[in-house]
Image 1 (cartoon, rainbow, N blue to C red):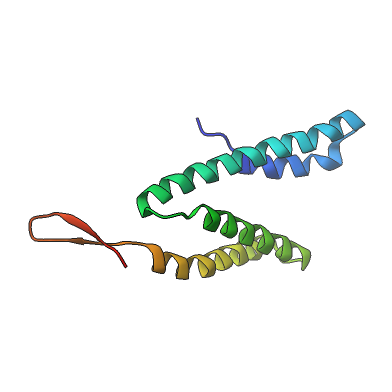
Image 2: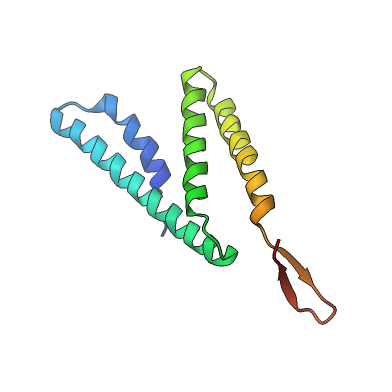
Length: 122
């Protein structure tokens, strides 16, 4: 079973107004930090598998695009965009940030007549 860490991140922030004591209010950042740590572990694990496939370092790029998404989401909330438009803004920023990187680092896979697949190093 996969842990729903991103959902727990959102849930933890929603629990702040419902805290009725100092102890319950202290539990919210604990829950939020644990969920954020799980999300970071998952992102790092995915980046390591992508690095092995690309045979080059991409971990910093993964963290950078995560930050772009977080910044775009925060700014869209700050200016008062509705949720759907905010998510669309995050998706657009992510695609705009990833498109040049993906085109420049992704190996081109070609297949010859015998069915062998070769990576074309750019």
